[in-house]
Image 1 (cartoon, rainbow over the protein chains, first blue to last red):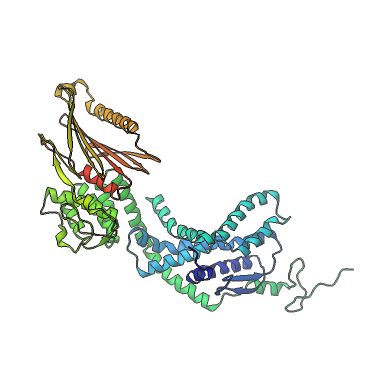
Image 2 (cartoon, helix red, strand yellow):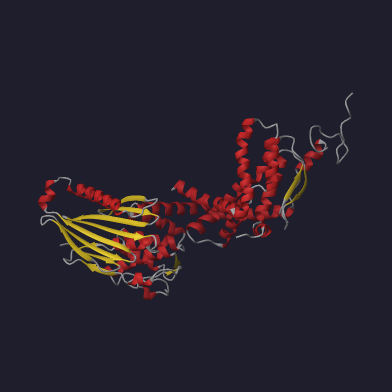
Length: 176
Length: 336
């Protein structure tokens, strides 16, 4: 089933905001000036951060993959308190459902956009990155591309649900 | 002679060298530390407060979740007392959880604590539950009512409109509707001609005698649309048992071998099969689950009478697990 992207972005807008904040956060850490930020809008892209081309390729890669790390960790963390009552005990309160919605929304926007993927690829393919670095980075970039394009097939939603809901299950299984 | 440094595009001070944008140190730092808007900060604070509130309850939730998981493991291993005690911890935190309360009731019943099971299962009256769980509870309630009609919660006490068991003992509404009521309603109790055992089955049994006069073998088979159900009994005299000091373990071992060889010979499609073996009370159980269905086999040795009971259910039967359990759990040996 194909649902317009703007509609998905609208329903899961907290994820878009966190995604752009993650870009901004990594720019801040690498002292890369930011010229414009849009945290959310109804359009394509649904959010963006315009920043200077970083001096180092590694910085460009980190700024590109930043949302993948931040959204994944934050999505799992936010959904965690709600996941156990809702999934395990069918006894969720409104607050639990709110956290699950937030967690899935945040985690499903972990995958970098196609624009981010291009930017990461520019960084990886630059001469500055040694061969070993390229060998490690290329599969990661391929995965990110897959994620970026896979949103058409609900891959981002599946990833968001897996991160937000499977992590508590996994922790329980490990501790039991 | 060196060229003069480029001017910062914002403040005209000398720009830092080696960057794409012409910016001085101060302007670069300021632009990189662009503040987050106030509405985002407020949203983060609000979500943070809610999160901290929810987080305060997390340890208790986690303990309940771990207890439930341990209960399931204990139940799967046939350790129903431990299962009941673990489920009780989960129910203490989540008394509204139908699955936790149901599992507690079932485990209490299997552990022999019938009064507690009745109390627990009664508290489920009128609740919605998944079909599989409903069927499982129905099996327990049917057993309870058969053994002690006054003790089990009767369906007529509740506002049920879902599936019906043969004993009208259903306190739950099933949230699915694809159960074939005909298949359910034809279940009836069967008593062997010699009265040595009783069992619930969805049809009539055909009886066969084989073996030798000194070691007779009785076979009872019920073939129905929901599956095939077999009870076999082999009798061993005291002398025969005395011949082997470890007669019991040898008997179970031989039965196991015969069972697996019969499964192999039967050519039943068992793609991606999983085999689980466990103790069930004083008996043994072998469960073969596959994409095509399930074969569950139990063996008991009782006063020289060796019983092997087998349920073969197809995956096309939506109540596959429940039907197999219903047959196997209802098997009772009369003390003769």
